[in-house]
Image 1 (cartoon, rainbow, N blue to C red):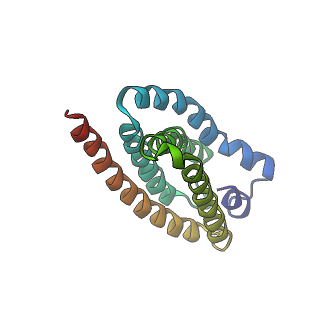
Image 2 (cartoon, one colour; image 1 turned 135 degrees about the vertical axis):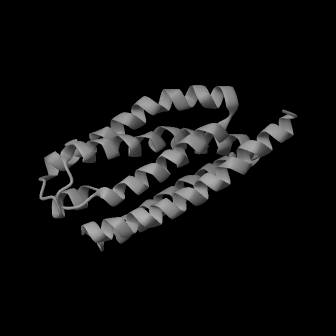
Length: 166
């Protein structure tokens, strides 16, 4: 997003940073809600909400073009911030729930490694497609991945309830 905001929309770095604040702000607001949900129901519902929001946010990126209003950019940022709170906490809770205690350090290390490798690969891909069409391609890829994550989250949530006898 920062690259697209600067290259396509022509915003300076400071304005691009301000336009991304809703993503961080919504992530901060979503985190305590996700924490309460995870405490009550485990990581499954948080992951379902997070991946559903990621799917919606990814689809909303398809409306971005060189003339997209600042209000729309901020609104889409709000939607994209929700997965930050729900998925970050949900994935960590799922890790702690499923990884054996004796392997927690290795599992946590792998978890973080895969997150950073994903970020590096995504940033590399985004750097090569700084156009609205390129952003739309990324949005489609993100939507497909989000739907797959959503489908993977639902059976995990159901499995937990079956194992608990609910």
